[in-house]
Image (cartoon, rainbow, N blue to C red; front, side, top):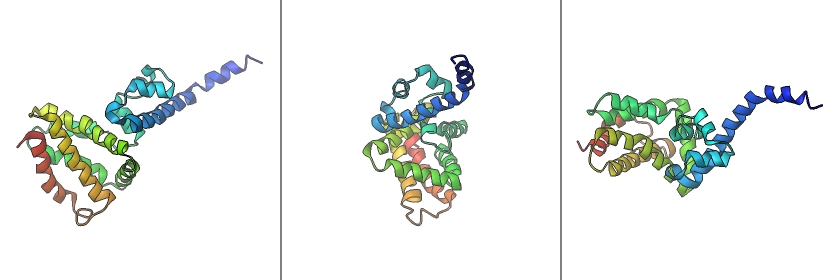
Length: 200
């Protein structure tokens, strides 16, 4: 009776792997909601999922990757950051916004960003989680690469600008911002982000 069980378990390893990834994502959502983005750790996520921390690294490249997958973000913000930085200092605020709009203004991206923001607005921790993620994984990375003074303050101000834009355009849908052409918004908001991030 015991012999057939062995092959059955071996055949089940691949689905079990997918189940482990799903368990990690469930635990990640809970850990991010409980501790915020800054307070959550990969070790804590692994512990909550009941897996070894090395397994988290097997499925994900880092905390930002876990967060993007757990929140079902339509794009990894790191990819947008790299593209914005590749163009140098001048116009980085506009390039950054253009990268975000390329995702946000697609039908799928719009639905997903509204769902994410609406789901976190119900709790103070959720709002903090999104803010910390944007600050640490987007704007602090840019500020650190550009080397201005007060990079943390600059990153927080830039994040507040983008969160406000998301709220007005996609969630509250306040006109004329809600239906304005992205390039028109970029022309107004891009220089503000540029000033926050570079001082220029």
